Image 1 (spheres, one colour):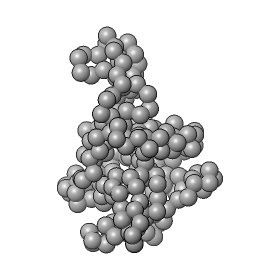
Image 2: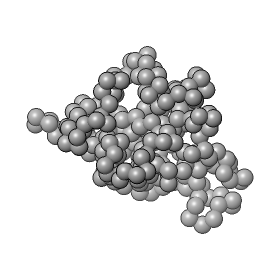
Image 3: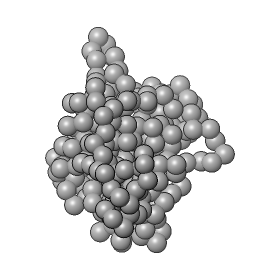
Length: 208
């Protein structure tokens, strides 16, 4: 299904994701087409984001090659703030909403490739993948591979300090490719929620 959408915009993936979440009985609080936050002032954006995130427990971030505006500071773009509010405990009317589970789903580029986000099989010894965190917003990159006591695989093909991580719980912001995510959305959400229940195991960076 994803291959049919590689020539379209991220908005098309948002619409498809909303329909998939509805199909799997997940409650969706994402933006509709007429709800883009891009035109709002900073204070209004914060208010709207906090309102959406407060009653949610999972945040899904769609990664794309052009998600960042290179001429605008990251703290002046709304996606880092959406992630920031998702990582915090939010208080509202005497009630507290805990830190959200967060999934980062990489979309294919116009050629149907994911190289901007993840490179498969970078090591001939263990065939491990390499997430290109330098291309993401810093608040995403700093909350990936941030387990306090990482589980590493000792691979002869890796230099000291670059051993691949084992398991699915190496990153609080849990990354995956779109093609993998849509194969079993509920399973991936469950994995992210398991990490949400183990917050003390992660070094969280909550400010863009």
